[in-house]
Structures are given as structure tokens and as C-alpha cells.
Image (cartoon, rainbow, N blue to C red):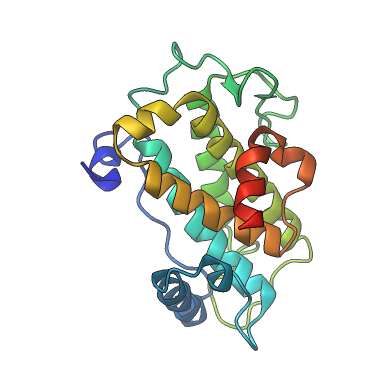
Length: 215
């Protein structure tokens, strides 16, 4: 069964895919991403296209990564529950607590599915805010745009870390490990290319990341 079919079984957690930001420009960049990914060369696919704006490139890819993680986590909603995963962890050494700085200012312990739900809602609100992710051509990105992107990608990494540490065997049994590995490799190469996640944050998956970057 495909990831899309699995994900669609739980409509509460599985969200519709977000479109590309920044109007027709975003659509053009999305086509470029799809074309270069189709070539199979992920290292080339993550590079900033010649003459393109870095913030536009970060915006379109951030939407893409949000969609990918959404779909991947959507395949696990019946296996990643508050009883199987009472805390959001990536192995015994790493626990993630949730805070959005607005409604929840002090980090709180939540189950993995609750963390994922809070996270997807929070990212969606960032992507929908045109003051952060402009939808129209020529509208400038805010001065803190790259900081917002870094926070989004850092938190999406935590979902990958949880999936690899807590649910990889289930992914294997669903025959979706190749898809997971490809999505994660794309994510790692992109965030590494632009220095978007601090090395300390990547520690839970260091071995996998090192093997990706050394190939």
C-alpha cells in the first residue's frame, strides 16, 4: 500500500498538501525541484538555481519538506499513539518538549502524536501567514525569515528522529523504508547545503547523517 493511501486513512492528522508560496515564481521553482529530483541527483537538486533568490528557494523547499514529513507521519498514526509513545523521544537520550512561544510559552511534555499535531498546526500557521511567507511576487520576505525557516526545519527533523528511533521497523514492514530514506537524504543534503540546522540538534541521527554526507 502506498504512503498516500495509508496517510489518507486518518484525515484528522493527514492534511492537504500546501501549495508553493510566492505566486507564479514559487510554482516555477517547484517545477525546478521536481525536475531535478526526478534526475536522481539529490546533491544537485538542493543547490540554489543560478540567478534565483535564496529566500524564495528556502520558502518553496520548506513547504515541500512540510508536505513530505506530513505524509510520512500520516502513515504511522495508528502505530504512534499516546500509549505507544507517551513522550516525544528520539532514543533514550533525547526528549523533545513543546512550546510555540505564544499559547504555550514554557516547554511542556507531550506524547509524540500530540507533539506532531502541535507542530503541524504551528508550521501551517507560519506558512499561511503572508507576512512571513509572501504569496505575491515582489512582496519582500521579513528580516527574520531565515530564522523562522531554521526553526521549522529543526522541528521537522525531530519528527524524522522519532520515526527512525521508534518506528523504523514498522516502516520496514510497510515496505516504505526506501521512501523514508530518500526523503530524509533530500532533507539532510538541503539543510547541510545552507547550514540550516545546528550540528548539536542532529545528534540523534548522527550516524545516518554522516553516511549521507560522506557518499
